[in-house]
Length: 182
Ligand code: IMP
Ligand code: MG
Image (cartoon, rainbow, N blue to C red):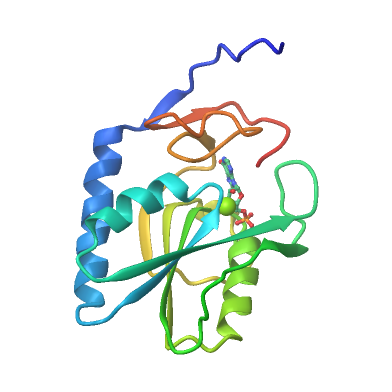
């Protein structure tokens, strides 16, 4: 048996701060899509908790689907070589699509996913991210809804992991820059 990790990440965003902001985002998205139906596309795995809270607060009809992309490269930097490892089941053509992701970092993964979805000719394509690390951006990617702009720290919790751990933390914490990211 492995020793369970003893580390308790320091708090960056409390569950109250997250809940308040997710409600604001949901109100804004519901207003922007009033009268329409949304195909919400969660980018696995990090977005799952954010997505679960967000869709419960939307007042427009939604369908939910998931994609998983994996980016080659080691250490904390994306290589930019991205591969879709789990694709949507839903057709995208003609749909109003909202992509939901956890963290916008270099932007390479999200950019790849957006380019891929755009080729499937959605009626509209918007993006919501819970956290944005603007300092780390290495490619142009436009997002429509941002929960929090955060400093360049390695964050965990509320769906986000370090080596698959901490996804179940109810808050966003940070830990000292580890050697790898998930
Ligand atoms: P990008 O392609 O560099 O923008 O990578 C973004 C992805 O890297 C996010 O969706 C996360 O899965 C992961 N990531 C980036 N920063 C962190 C972090 O601070 N903690 C955990 N995962 C992170
Ligand atoms: Mg991700």
